Image 1: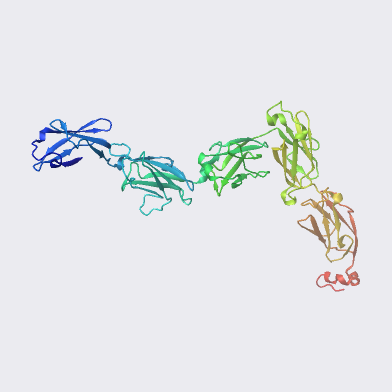
Image 2 (image 1 turned 60 degrees about the horizontal axis):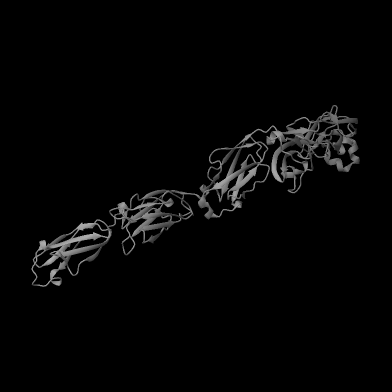
Length: 509
């Protein structure tokens, strides 16, 4: 710093002095002294020059022949010099951000000495850009706002990444047109779903077969600003879970859902606002549970059941709970058995009976439909065990199966005769396929099976007279079998005008 003082404004014109008689010193606010060079030119102009080592208030004291000037001391201020290479920035917004979620970072403006750059009348000109890449024409993905605090030289930058951009991006920070230290900064814009993950992280979770399993979804702190509701989560379980899955919130703010695993491995997709959360899909390793078995009415363990045959699900509580001291009343257990959905109104269920002894719970019911039945057991109103039972169609019952049609009463030589056989099970329900046998001596037969358990039989009598037709289902005769048929000659058709259309080609009445 240099400044000039006209000596005529300070001293009388007739005062004689030379350059060596003038001395000066500069003191900082902290009392540190800075040497000053004094120069007197031929026009009696005094030039004081010195190098300030720090910014801030300075005091210049000048003396002539040991006595201070009447204008001394002189107060001056040393303004700092901005150095972009010494400016640093830090904060979450320079590392990673979440699309659609506000973030920020702080800029520490410093001078050439690395000190806070505060002694300026106006803020430093900062240019902040958040873009998809370093390309000059790169898409801007945010509109940064810069806030200045003149007391400490700090600048706070706030921005919200565009929800349409995910992945790598850059942040340019320029001071007075030059990049600051570290600029441009590489950041990663994550989807908001990355803020949510299973409590087990990327590791598979484990469960016990048939035993209700809760899975917890935790979130990062900034997720609180998103105000995500439980119903915004969609949970898909493969293989499919028999129970409907709902997500709820717990007291600690996490999200919880549960299901009862039945397969060896389940894959769980957790989707939030159209995208998977972090570490989804979740793998659930299921350990076998020998505390659950399915028995028939004779107490024999079975894998497949038959409609119309009583069945029981027995729970060995000691094996399931791994605790011998738990005491439950049978009234604390509830069971719901649901028929296959394609034959069931949503509010219908199979009646069940729940009984308990010292070691186990027994749920008994009578399956009346074939297909997969879902058995849901609740303990103290909470899901406890869920399993599935495959029920096969009941066996065909010859005593409830029957034949009908003209062909089991009357027939004509050379004219096709027909009748139908309806096959039912012990519950009176149509069933198929079965082993249907139609025996007509010396007559060719054919049968056509329909989809509703009805078989259509046709045959061609060769001679007149009595004919016996035997119809067996699974090796046993159906109701009223064998059937006695009176076979007439073709000339008898003249008495039956409606039968003319049945005559084979070339035969006339």
